[in-house]
Length: 247
Image (cartoon, rainbow, N blue to C red; front, side, top):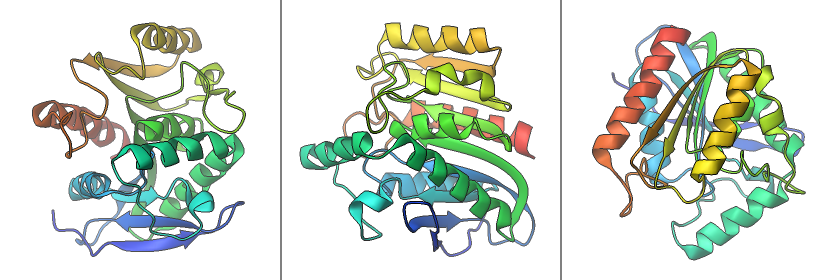
């Protein structure tokens, strides 16, 4: 599917303007909307390409800069190196949980008001973005959410104070959730995955669970950990969810 030229909007949030990139099909029509959350490095090349992949399958995709209030200037991309990881991880624990949630609501409202959006809303994210997508699933108008190796849920350490309530709120998920994990990912060990799975079961959530033989960042099409075949399979699972629930 041919895409319209990429655009961006500086969305008003309680903590200032949030640069958000919008990708959508060029063909006239109404398409479901998906908020797509990046890793700690913000909107890198791999994230843009994945957003284009989603849009090319018939979705209006909004990609917010998750650390907009901390970087100050829009358009900042952190490098995939130790300095970039250190800066992104510092931001992860500096930003407040309320700010993450406020950004989610702002991004959803942006999508809902887009002229090409049908009003059906979903979320997807990778790494910290998987956690942010998970929290976005708490919003009542989110019907489908795909989370790839979501960090910090089992340790409840997202945000300022490192004491988030995500794992206690799974009953708030009214839509369907897809959780995908890499068994070789040191950031979410087996014990952490088991804790999350049990909490989902106890909450009565509607979810699908996949554990694959992959490392952290196996979805990212840069670096030694990229697994192209596994990425294709798992992105297909996310598309299956969105096609079934949002269309």
